[in-house]
Every structure is written in structure tokens, then in C-alpha cells.
Image 1 (cartoon, helix red, strand yellow):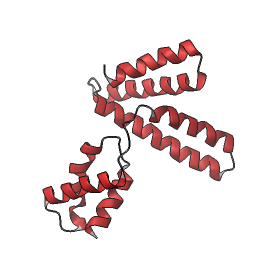
Image 2: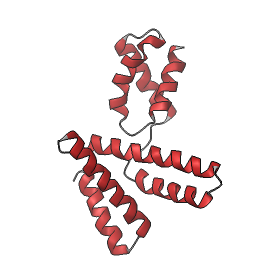
Image 3: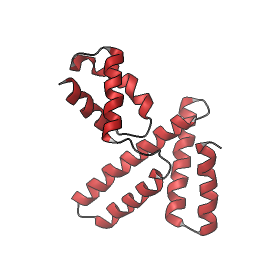
Length: 147
């Protein structure tokens, strides 16, 4: 059973249990997945769905941060609760050591020597981490290892 089927089952489960917040988040996710499918004109695979979920989590982190700065803690809390629901569908996050190992392998594979080669390294690393680490964290790791 794929990720799309898991999410569809979770929607049904949330309806049965009358979990309004979870149901709302899952419906937004289904909508985003449908929009992404229409844009790409192809059936979404699990990797595509993970990208959608990752983008939604990032958006909610940004919103929660802005709400906190604006003194709207109740809205920030709502965004954080939505993040919890979405993160349930993401794979386990990579540890710092695992991420460093993947970046070092990519550096060796691409024979990168300076920050100019960052694009090559990112092209190799990003598909391998698919939803398990933030692009910003990967970027910082590459800069640290090359610089």
C-alpha cells in the first residue's frame, strides 16, 4: 500500500473518530496532492507526495514563526498541531552523523573541491534524503565540509 492510500485511509479514520483538526489537515494534503498531480500531468509517486508534505510542513513552520512574532500564540499553536499531523507521514529524520556521511559520499562521488561545486553535490544528495532532512541543513553541512 502506497503513501497515497495510507493518507486516504487516514482521512476515513479521522472522519470516523470525528478528529476535526486531523481531518482538516489531511484534506488540505489531499488537495495539495491533487493540485501537484494536475500540474505535473502524471500520477504522483511516493517521492512526489513526500515533497508535497515537506513543503507543507515548511510553510507551517514559517507561519508559526510569523504568528509568534506577531503575538498570535493561538494561531502559532494551530500551525504546530498541523505540523504534528503532517510529520506522521514523513520518514524518520536523518541524524547529523548520517547526513554528514551522505554528504561526504556525494563529495567523493562528484570529486568536489570548493563551494563552486555545491550544485553538483546537492543534486546527488537531495534525492537520497527525500523528506528525511531539510535542504537548509544539507546546504550548511556541505558548506562546513567544503569550507
